[in-house]
Length: 366
Image (tube, rainbow, N blue to C red; front, top):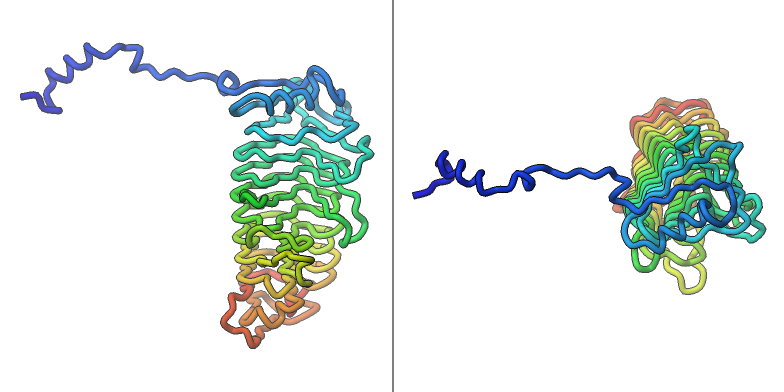
């Protein structure tokens, strides 16, 4: 009787197996993806970025776009918005000839509210680009899952002069009514001199913003919000902001759980369970961290270095004053306010927790 441990049977079985089937076959990544290379700085035409994106959108399956141009001396000066990215794609913006990042410039676009890259395709990767001077947002992820935005420079995007103007950011993430807006990662980017740095809202969930430099943006460095003009598809929840350097913005990090009631028939589902950890938040023009609005709940602020902000280190305001019961700061007393703990009438609600902070030259306030 044959058993699995019979040496003779194993030897016989090996003779019946083709040697070819035992040898794994590996192919370079470029051979498994549809490949396009950007070779032209022109707005359109062969070798242009526009042509490469159009080709990728028309090709089923994952595509790879590489480039042989890069640096400020070889900018792509666009005259109109690029096509939205609708098929899974990897854009590797590091030039194969000079090792510099491909620069996409939108200063020649006269139409308002045009974004740099507008991504609808989940599991895409956007890497090593400079995206600058667009009328609206540099890279906008809409309804995506598991997109990675890494090692890019996003600068001078957006034109809004007031907070009430239509917002724009270096990077923005939102779902659609069908879902998405979750499990995306924004990391190792330089996000500077935009209207807002990084924005998440309308129900963006479980995204990670980590190890970025977010500096010199007109308004908030990171803004996480509930409704926008009364339109919120899901609760904006479980987003993580970790390990970033956030400096010289208005507020360093701002959570808006709705200061006003939604507009029209909209619904406000709130901003919940945000985790803010291990960031360096310094020299911002307003507050280091702002938690505002009665539906901003369950926030954890832990192990950050927060210093030299002109307002408070951590400020809890709006109706969150009563909803954020049991909020405490374990950091040392600061020059502009002392560490304190206050209980409000809504003690059963999940409240922001502030712990293990280093807070200097700016206080914790409620």
